[in-house]
Image (cartoon, rainbow over all chains, first blue to last red; front, side):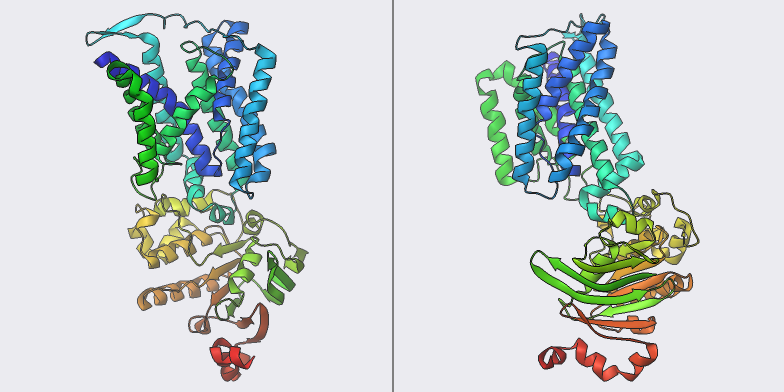
Length: 287
Length: 239
């Protein structure tokens, strides 16, 4: 039982890392970033490459988010910024086009085969937790998610950037009227979202096959998390990620054939009955 | 000094302002009135940098600033208080004020948070309340206080007393007197002259996107019938 809960929570933390970036980008930029999964995939490949060059998992974990954050800033500045005043369809097409470009680039550089990143030393065993054997790496995933979640809350609730972010989510024009360069904040937020996606890719690399298309599988679940949590709502993303992680873990145990049916039925019901998200506390309080 | 010179503004194909000209200097209070749809808010948004004139010039301190951004206008001392106040709902009163101080500024018009809270004591009592929990009057005080913290030389106010209880209107008028005494210029947009009459040095009336009357305090006092006619439906039918 406790083992299943920990598996569910570790899956939830991976989903949260991705969904947090996705929901932040939507809240601040109003863009639904289809390419988020491709950034996750690229993060995993960059982590693999850094590990190959340095044999250091720490370096992979650090460098992948930094490099992908830089790429995210470039994408926002050159490709998304000209589209903010255009129709959402054009933004969707742009991010969809990015998936094709990034996946093709990965295929050209690393090929179509699977890549494996070994579990870092010290993380390859398991420890007994209340009668169940739990992989140390799952505990690490859980801890990473909790640490990032706490960091994001600190950023959003306690820093000037977070204050601007919360303000711009409701009245971006008014933030501009206070002299603040909202365009720069958007670049920072997209870069941060890309870094979180890359971090998710890097921490997933030792436990999931690193391959072209790996982003597509998980990004669908991430959209479910973002919609259940409420678009632009970080607290909601955490709650929805835990909900979906536990649903998948217990589903695997008790109703493996029905996991997807239950997941997407929940999604459809939420979209029909509570489109603002299952976990939105109120219309205003989003952070 | 902020001046509009023969400004034309369009929303898509529709022309909203037709050759609008007037100016406001630091310390001067200008009332901009007109009926619904006269172009008052459009004029204010143009002065704040949100709209780019199709022709004519927006002049700030002698140089053309047509087409600059709202960020630039604010950093140059033009502060804007929109009609819907745009208080940040998920920020506390204190944060709504603090966010205005993020951009580093200098100059004689700089207000401190303590001064703003002294000007509006009600805000001091509500410092930890979220924006979405404030009453209309509190939101208006906060919107004005927030604008003051950007160190404005000129304050652009869109219907600042709209929908407020008389006692709150009186408090806000007192605050405006104090703000003007500090050398801040103001442009008020109002549908009528009830509030601006108490404060203004100059009066401008817009109708269908054009300036149809302007004058100083003495001219205003001598032209009450004309002004009343222009601000009522009688004026529209006669035009």
